[in-house]
Image 1 (cartoon, rainbow, N blue to C red):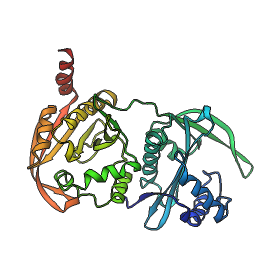
Image 2: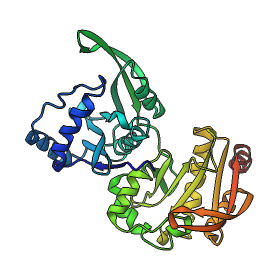
Image 3: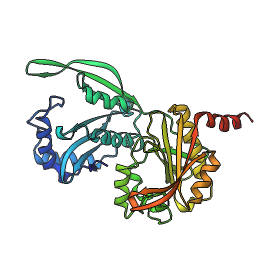
Image 4: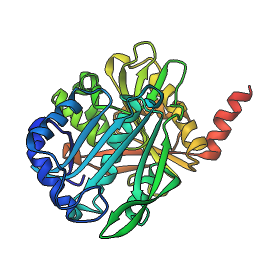
Length: 354
């Protein structure tokens, strides 16, 4: 973690946001304002933030280091009926915090909100054509250039071009007969806490129990909002009952590999839910993401996880006698399994032909 946390802005943040806007506006010519900041009074900013808090489709977030605002993002949809399927956003980060992953954290937050809460189909943005750092970030998250605003800004008598970028959100979410795998949202915090507070769930996978709904909300923001991390949602209820994802870490370090991780609420153990979700995510990994290897592991004694991986067809690679479990300050024995794309094709494509 980089010590940065993302929170939803409230009217109480008005004065701090105005001070932030003046500071960040003085640091570059990439924003619509300069050192004068946003042309709002504190009361006007409070009214704007109150409106955003009351909206179901508009939102503003702060990236904070301690009590200091170091980044800001906003998202809004177009409210005319024929344009309500579209949304747009903006991001800013204090210059001293560039290169620390804050833009990525804010982008993950925006995309999850747009997909799960606002249900936007298309997201667009404008960015200076020479702002290579920002353009690279947006491209990483699937945005493509669709045009150019010639002379969008005029600064000190000089016209500045902006690229128009867009991303479709209409990608079909992974789903199975009983399940939908969708991004987590802060609105899922209560359901997440319902299951993650159980001492039989998290510690077996190496993480501590959640201590409150707010703790679950923070973990959704900072952990479960990472790319390719999904809530396991029952079609029958529309509610999340666990989590599954493809991650990059010490096992999966290459661009063509990932580690499969998962957990499930205890009331749903023994119903084949994790294997069902994992089979679909493996298909997504090898067919959609074009990965070559997927890793998976479990700690000694976690028989449920061992059986899941055996059922999926993972092959055992090695056993480690001393595996650090930093979130619990423990050292455990661990097992590492792997599945290659060729092994997956043999296992699952063969079954489809039968």
